[in-house]
Length: 172
Image (cartoon, rainbow, N blue to C red; front, side, top):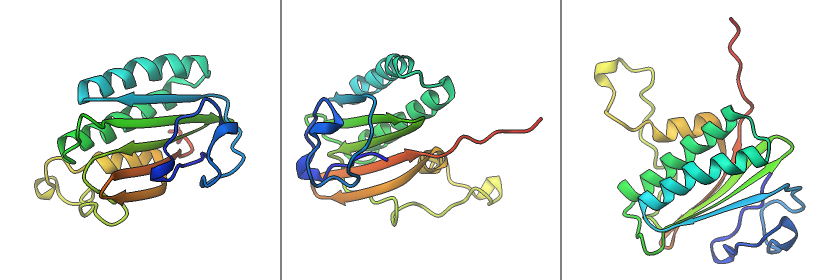
């Protein structure tokens, strides 16, 4: 599990030993923390693509989980800019943790408040294709691969904490 910062404690430190005292999970055994701080959609997506690839190789993260992490981060960031009125001056901050094969991350943006625990559109995956709205599947993708373990949505932005779900295998 990862430490998830409170909004006013979003300090970036080099190791888990220097995390603030009021984190959600104390004593996380973190191998490495990757910090992404971006201003603007292109900058954020570029950092996700380049730095996740390098970090996941250095952490010996398998390609599958690394790709899922990248997809989820791209979706969160794109939603913030395209739907949340994200102010590029404040941008996005992401801290990614790897511990014993578990990928976790804390995500902060300064977009309009959005609480996925109560504000998601109705699930239409089982509806006939002609009755499904275009789009509205970003959070379905996110929650397919990661569990939301913390959510704070307020006037200063959003903080989400995620943990990867166990990989599923398809028998052939």
